Amino acid sequence: MGSNKMKTINAEGLYYRQLNEQIDKVVKTDKNIILNNVFGQRYIGRALPEKVKIKINGFPGNDMAAYMDGAELEVFGNGQDAVGNTMNGGRIIVHGNCGDTTGYAMRGGEIYVEGYVGYRVGIHMKEYKEIKPVIVIGKKAGDFLGEYMAGGAIIVLGVGLDKNEDLIGKYCGTGIHGGAIFLNGSPDKYKLGKEAAKTELTDADKALLKKHIEAYGKYFKKDVSKIKAEKFSKYAPLSANPYSKMYSK
Image 1 (cartoon, rainbow, N blue to C red):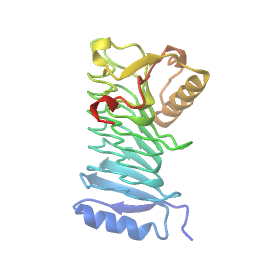
Image 2 (image 1 turned 180 degrees about the horizontal axis):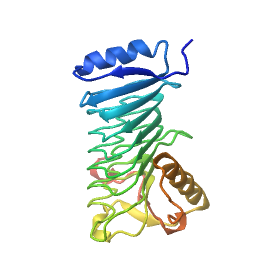
Image 3 (image 1 turned 30 degrees about the vertical axis):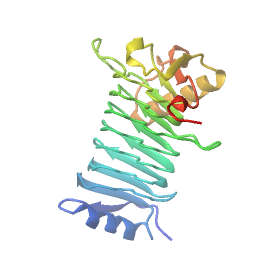
């Protein structure tokens, strides 16, 4: 039986394989871990199951939480590319920014990013029945947000943006054929992919937004009382099979 006390691992100077081997060994007996001095080590938290909680002090490398299966990772620093790559479940909380392809092909769970994210975030996200992944972005996203998205929800809050900053980059929702993208405001039409259509918010959408806005405020200790679900724009697929004309029958 593991204790409730946090087990600490010093990652300074460790090669990524060494660090992940130490994590694998510790989680057999201790489910609560603190990683200190993390600097670029890849694959932290990959395939970790439920009940494991890791607090990461530093800057984890690419593919953090790849294939994660229910654990919770909280990062006090920035995440690099492909955070949550193909994750099945669990929660990621990043007190900072994340790079490109955050949530790549994620199939379940939640990712909360306090600040900015890069390009192609949420690409190939998918869902199955009641398992619907969610990405919540605090500030803004780069180009190709939700590209080829097949399920789940992406929520962009626009917290603390300057007047000259746009909420999203270009080509948002390109190739989308499932799920929905929720934006706090209405972007210029040229920023949207031709497969994404603005649709009306449902009561279920508003409840989803309220839940995740409040969670964002809780995790990052921010006042979100002025962020109203009713002010969001929803973008969903024009078609469930947007490229059917490209293939012969």
